[in-house]
Image (cartoon, rainbow, N blue to C red; front, side, top):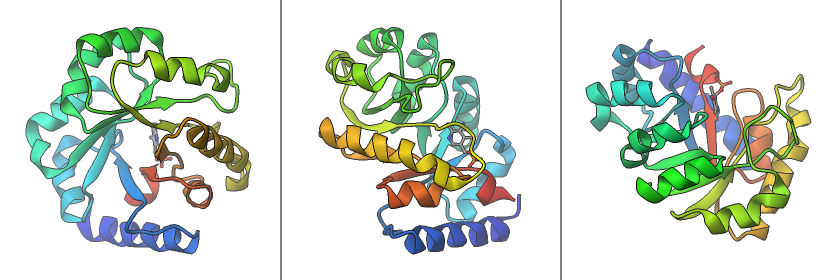
Length: 207
Ligand SMILES: *Cc1c(COP(=O)(O)O)cnc(C)c1O
């Protein structure tokens, strides 16, 4: 991992956020680090990355054991309820609360703040709460819900994600929620145009 290269990539992501109509000072860039070895994390910090998102509880704890102070840490992956205990006290924000069993664990192991993952595309096998069930789910959540997250299907053209992002933004507005975690390497500009406040990008930073 070469810090200069990552710094250049990060700069271009900021430019593309601005070109998409976002304020690069306000749209948070969460670097997805599932592809990054612990030993490469200092290079990311050196490149100017301040916020990272991990997908697996075990990897989160292992990477934090070495480099906790380098970043703010979010959890962005599928969260098994038995892992809530390990993740909740160790992150700024969990992006991906999506089950009643996770809510039950949050009651015992509170997180500071969470986002609810929504299955806006209605994909059967996908994690996420159905839009129709969102209101009740948020009410049952024992810790503050400050926004919504979605992971749309893999798309051929970024534009194909737009309806999903627009729907997520609409749902957040309906429920009075501020944070919108949406957009990855494949479609972050469209997400920003639709109001993303946090984009989660990996590949575009490391290639
Ligand atoms: C890996 C991952 C990302 C980043 O994906 P890229 O295509 O590498 O930008 C974003 N969100 C989640 C939940 C991920 O698992």
